[in-house]
View 1 (cartoon, rainbow, N blue to C red):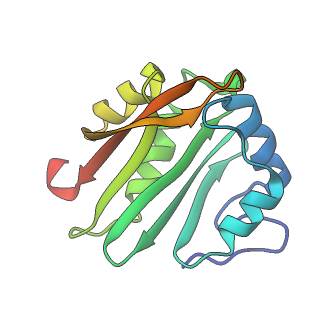
View 2: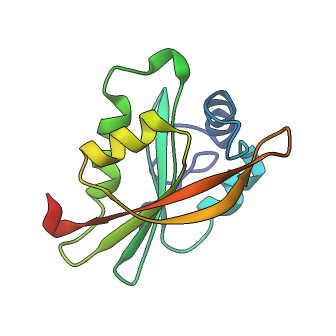
Length: 150
């Protein structure tokens, strides 16, 4: 497991407050996470983070299965390959036998396209999983990645 320097998320060059700021600028659905939520998450077994000053990916790896918990890039830094690079860093934590999954809002076409282009496949749907601020619901698309696809 990656060491977690004081005040920083494990493996990240960002503080929890910086992560929360980027997450809030990136998401309304799912709702943005607060710094305290990132701190709690980063204290959990198997959780890791990769980051630059303008984006990060948080994942969890336990017993040969990984979950991409969140990937966020500051809106001002998008469309420059950072999301793809962070996704590659997430995948670098997996071994040959590991499988990974994630959930993405059905309406988040750019993220779904990024994941598909990186070898992820849509494998399921969670109806009404996310709530918008106006209380409307949105489906979550479950995507999976297996080492053999790359």
